[in-house]
Length: 246
Image 1 (cartoon, rainbow, N blue to C red):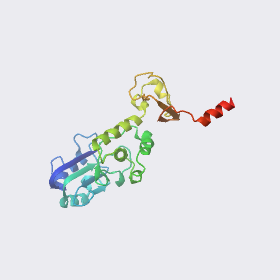
Image 2 (image 1 turned 60 degrees about the vertical axis):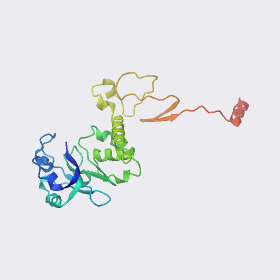
Image 3 (image 1 turned 45 degrees about the vertical axis):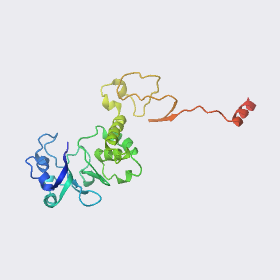
Image 4 (image 1 turned 180 degrees about the vertical axis):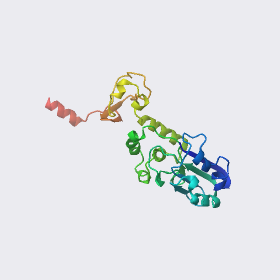
């Protein structure tokens, strides 16, 4: 798993955060004590809020302990809010666009961890991103897609709620077969299987979605539409046509 830090306080030089502590982030990039991997050498990134309207970002695919440009930058730049991240990839390519932090306007985003089964649900997650935001996605990581889902759900207005809704959405998309790998029936179903019933046939968490009263359910393969159902009085002309036809 990746290692990262976020700093908020009086202005500090970046090397005071990245190099000087005994167990600094640069030290962790080569000798992590608590991470899943000892070495985090698949790139790094630093973001800081300075005098400009948007935060600065410096990212590289070099290992943090090996990058001379990072040492030069850290010795000169200072800021009161800093993000720093060292990467251990969970499968996506080692490239600058996959290095954290990710930036959108005034917002920076870092993520430590992975979305299990990401490749199987990547398309569904991407299709949920606001079309106006989608062109800004540059890389291929689950972390960046997570960021843009949070932005779609209103990160700029209410960060806590937006992130919670993004996590809930991701969990809802995740396949039941991944949640219940030993369930014999689920292993035999296709991804587009849907079942409409009067009440749940079992107690698998996440398997059932309640349909509200007065709702029309339309199933197209794996896509389910829930639309309000409101009785409507037919027009006079329509009634007359049906009577005359009968």
